[in-house]
Amino acid sequence: MSRFVQLHVLTSYPPSNLNRDDTGRPKTAVIGDCTRLRISSQSLKRAWRTSDIFESALKGHIGTRTKEMGIGVYQSLTKQCVGEKNAREWAKTIASQFGKLKSEKKTANNEDLHVEQLVHFNPEEEKAIADLVTQLVASAIAPTEDDLKLLRKQHTAVDIAMFGRMLASSPAFNTEAAIQVAHAITVHKAAVEDDYFIAVDDLNTGEEDKGAAHIGELGFGAGVFYLYICIDRELLQKNLGGDPELTQKALNAFVQAVTRVSPTGKQNSFASRAYAGFVLAEKGDQQPRSLAQAFLKPVKPNQENGEDTLTRAVKELTKRRDNFNTVYGECADTSVQFNVETGEGSLSAIAQFIAE
Image (cartoon, rainbow, N blue to C red; front, side):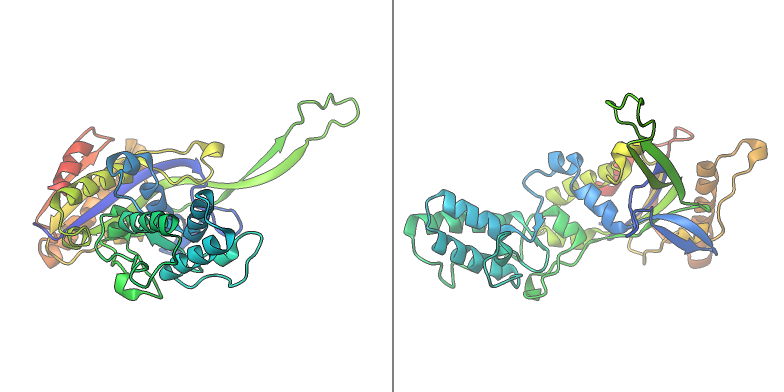
């Protein structure tokens, strides 16, 4: 089995605001002395792991990321007629096994049941918690030290196996991410533009006030984005308890999501859903390398021969791949690709290549 799988993905997004900064405008980065649009890896990974594709393909093998597991335990206990005092204390005790609690005092919003750090629970831990709740309801006796051994090192949560987990208070139960995801960047210069818009009050006849009921501005941008992903297949299978079948299912669902699922930011405003236009997949044991260097010089299509930005980006990407191979030797053992512009290759072939 080749250890590393590398994906090089080009996707063209129409006007959009998929991933906002603290001012509400699309995120950017300065690369090659010019501004590019950017989509953070965190935004991409969340879109993939919460997608319908993951949910349908990997049902039962997806974790839950939350600070509020203690609230769920408390509500479950009280619904099953456990007294308020015991329910709260037991819920706090259970939640504290996964991290320091946010507050020691009872508050209106149950902050004393929140864990300070966002925790990614795997299905095995969620089952262990549910089983303990059932036990507490039946026995009406506080949980013992053995009962509270709820953390699980071995699990079948594909999203945790892929993207990792860190528990500051229990590092023995951390999971090293098997998939590294770069921030996606436009291959060309890009500007953040402003959409000035107004909203009209439907019941305003205009007899007294002809003005708009609301005025606003919304930042947006458009472009062809390059995304690099590195998958450590060996680590992924190890994270999934050595299960080769689940590993293959996980990789298939992953490539389906990467090529089909867009971040959810401002989708109702822009409907900026896009499929990948080009994917190059590589396998081998060689040290991985990104091809982002192909776009240090912003891509400019050749307008004279009708060349578009995506077509030019594909040429620059493959040229950089070939140059790396010339200088360093073959950087991968095998590769396969699809190109929507030319109608070559297929997603199913890419998925099979990665999963095998």
